[in-house]
Amino acid sequence: MLLYAYMKTRSTPISQTKTQALARVLASATHGYTRVCMGTVLPERLSALVAKFDALYGIADTKGQRVVNKRARRASTLFAAYAPPDEYRVENERLPWMLLATPGDGIEAERWVDVVDRPVWLDYQLCRHNDAGEVRWTWRRTSAEMAQLYAEVGDDLAKGRHGAVARTLQRIAHQPGFHGIRTQSAELLAFAIGRGYEGELPTLFYVQKISHGKPLLIG
Image (cartoon, rainbow, N blue to C red; front, side, top):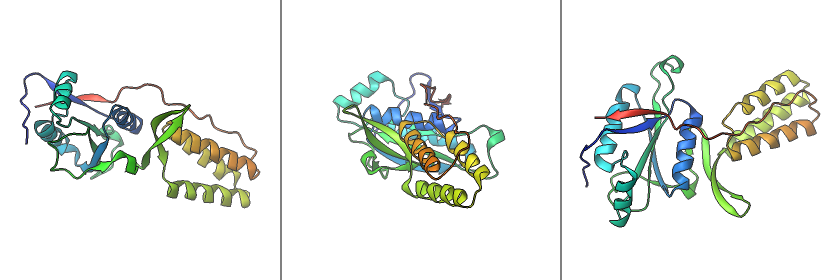
């Protein structure tokens, strides 16, 4: 197992919003990080976990170091974590994290899931979609969650609870606006209109290019 020396200041971004964390994973999958493992950690243990993964797998490696890894058929890794500000955390909350890896050796100690198997993280499912003939990665709500939303909206409309429907539609409109999630939201809005909803429809926003988080210094 390769241990990484700390020659310079090393850091990795830690996301304070779900959108930041999900965007980091999408960017990583797009750039060839095809395996993931996931877990949770207590907030006070996050720094130690990051330091451990960097020592073992070089999660804070530079671009040049990653090129060297590829030539040596050694895996490169990246780290993503969702750590909301203290004021938004609940008591005893654990922070979800994800370790991502490229093809290669040296990371056999972890339990990996291939991204093509559609892993679920932060309640969203990673999947591919066809964009004008080009395969891209996106996030979607799970089938179970969408079935629940359709049932909820349909039942509320059947019983004339249009205020409840309006609140549901506003809630989904405020969820991260990745292509897959936004497409599902638009389909749910169309479903509500088809079932007789005449209220104001919320705007569905696109996710713009954003920072992946605040750098956490390692060591």
